[in-house]
Image (cartoon, rainbow, N blue to C red; front, top):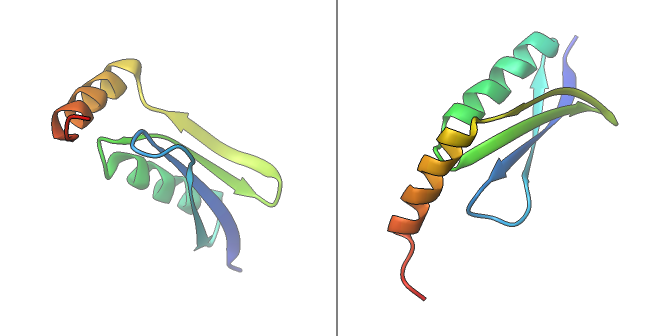
Length: 80
C-alpha cells in the first residue's frame, strides 16, 4: 500500500519551506527520500516529513554545514 507524505524542505535562500508531496511504501522509504533531499543542496538546512498532521521525521543540518552554506550564498548573491 502506498502512503502519502508531506515533505517540507527549509532552504536558506527562501523565507518559507518548500512543500513536496511524496508517495512511498512506508516511513523508512519516506525518510530515505527526505535525507536525499536534504543532501541534494548545500542551501537545504532542514527537512520534515508529515503524514497527515503527525511529524514522522525531522532533521536539521549541523551549524557548521549551515555556516558554510551561508558563506556560499553570500558569495553568490549580488550586492544590494
